[in-house]
Amino acid sequence: MDRVIIFDTTLRDGEQSPGASMNVAEKLHLAVQLEKLGADVIEAGFPAASPGDFEAVRAISQKVDNIQVAGLARTSKGDIDAAWGAIKEATNPRIHTFIATSDIHLEHKLRMSRDEVVQTAIESVKYAKAFTDNVEFSAEDASRSDWDYLCRVFEAVIEAGATTINIPDTVGYAMPGEFGELVAYVHEHTPNINKAVISVHCHNDLGLATANSFAGVNSGARQVEVTMNGIGERAGNTSLEEIAMTIQTRGGLLNLKTGINTKEIFPTSRLVSMVSGIVVQPNKAVVGANAFAHEAGIHQDGVLKNRMTYEIMDPEMIGLSSNRLVLGKHSGRHAFRDKLKSLGYDFNSEEIDRLFVKFKELADKRKEIFNEDVEALVGEEILRIPDIYQLRYLNVVSGTVTVPTATVRLLVKDEEHQSAEFGVGPIDAVFNTIAKLTKTNSKLVRFAVNSITGGMDAQGEVTVRLQEDGLVALGKGTDPDIITASAKAYINGLNRLEHLKENPAKNMDDINL
Image (cartoon, rainbow, N blue to C red; front, side, top):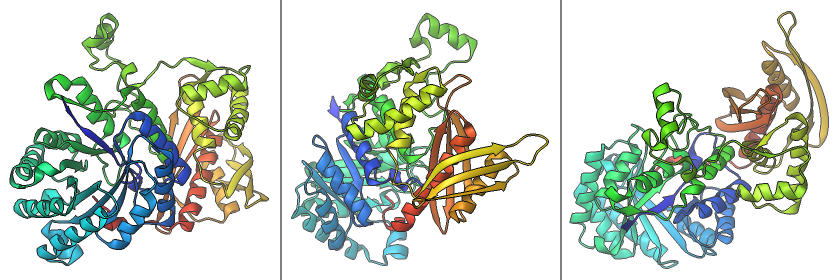
């Protein structure tokens, strides 16, 4: 079987999802999990974009050992210098440089001729090659480029030292048959193509990212660029889990394999959702809540007799275990630490102590503590930026014959402040009070509630999206009390907005592969 290289760009392209900006600690946790998952390459970020991105990529390069770490760079010496500075301590560093090749990009964005783009691409690859032999070149908007010109560019950069050439469907425009023909054309009409690996990077604007990626693989590509849960700008990217499980399930037909440890797929999916604040849609392939659920009577009967009647994958194959009781209020610190390790988290003593306090508080409220509850604690207490605003007290009065009123006490930059406000409902009253105390004018553009587990005492998981002065941030909060969870989510979103104000958003226009 041929090996397909899995190039994960969750930490770079995935982070370009609106409001999904991640801090260094969050990226580190995800990088470690992606290494455990078995991805071959992590695109850790775009080091030239901001000091925060540079530090995150450098920290990841120092942390992981058994995976290639790539840094993205435009075709400029400054970008390439930044990329190398961030990844040079990695065990196997890769510089990933790119420039657009479609006429629409050349004319309207780059304002360069075809010859100028070829020369720029050659010079950038040669410059990157001086730092590392592992150089990838991407032709942005390849699917809308002239095919012969694309082959000319690829031949030139391979001659300059590129070891991977990437064919992106940047705007998700291609159809599977068309994209497969493009990859085959590049394979057949680039004289030195045998010196490089062909990669594909597809977007999901028309819902064809996975289909286009497999069309590319069937035509000779041996690297697929993906994100966990398919997150990414606009409609997202090719989903890692869909590529991995299709190859796992239909490997005999495809004659392909990957190095993915499929049992780490679901834990990785949960962690990405937790960190990014982007909830996985219930009907999402492989990792959605309904992926292994059966409601129709005929389906239930068939599954009870033989799972293979309606399930082509074993849930345990992706690491999805049953919702079983894991801990209780009498569980000790040692048992709690072992549970964290079994879920794939490796924290120091100080972090475990913080989590254990929160676990005990939750255990006093709930009779049963499930894996998902523990993961929610991890997301709320560990994977977050330092808080400028912290909730100290919350009281709400509401009902059919009273005006909803919220009293909130916040710690604002180490000073306690308290106030009360009205609202059309209890959550609106809470949000109005928090906005008054923090003196913020953010707009609530999304509010979503999910139940982490089943049962009347299940924890509620609230996700909000806040917008202010062109910045967008997601906030998450969990609690058995949905109003308290909403307050936590709103405050988390405000903290993330403050973080973005201190670390201005990157110019995404130039890094849209």
